[in-house]
Image (cartoon, rainbow, N blue to C red; front, side, top):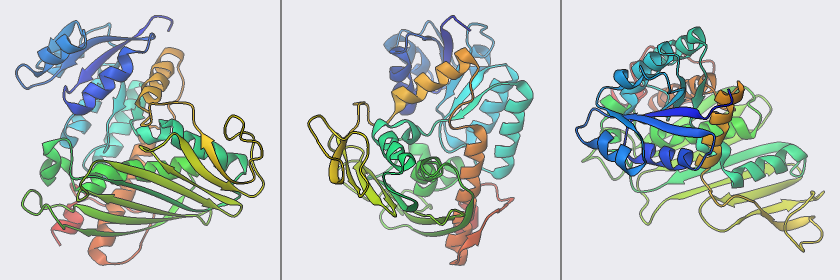
Length: 360
């Protein structure tokens, strides 16, 4: 495919705006349509981002032959049907987290995309963050030795979208909202080894007037390569977003704060190829520069998927990766209910993750 990739948006609010900004700068993408059932929303989005077609019914938008891919940024309980309908229409799909509400829905979505022969990319932008990408390069190069511990945390004062307060729409609380990126981050950082066990602690500390779900979560994953992942997510932190990660290994460690500074603080006994201009030796503590100012990785995420559609490549993060994250989420809520470690593989017929914890 040599022509620009035609893009349609299902959803018109916060995350769809970020998607549009990322795609608008890509010369290989063309914004074609947007759909939202809320009167005036799609029309306003189309006006703001020079999108020629707007709809209140996404099914009408899917009929447009000039649309090659869709970006889905809607409430979680709509993801399954939207994905299956887009696949049936022959559209490649970028899907926001979480994948869906249930493991049965996840299987249905993967099957629908396989059957239709379309690509499904799970939109976990941390895997495209330049700073976190630099951390992975350091780990993969051997600068840190064998990985022993990975940490990632994301905290702020509550979700952007109000539907996340409602467990019937969201499926859970902060772990569903912000644990998803951390789970896939750890799998991606480590080269996707097998997860053997899941342990979680969930609590509602501040927002019991808004939600039945948890607003604080601690998650521990054990991998079959001997590495452990520790994830902290919270809707109770004031003062703005905080997103940071650590990678510990037998030969070194590196720390990165996604939103502060333009370097990764690194310790490496053997050293590595390059830290910073005029940096000299890279043994010991160094400040490892990354090249991209767009810290969250949305530009890279959509550049990648446009390239996948245009050149028939497999996305870095697929629907099967999303399904693996869903398995961890369900195991985590089961762990929080039981107060014990849950071994993988794990299967649940619950309609949503919260049911395993909140209804106990």
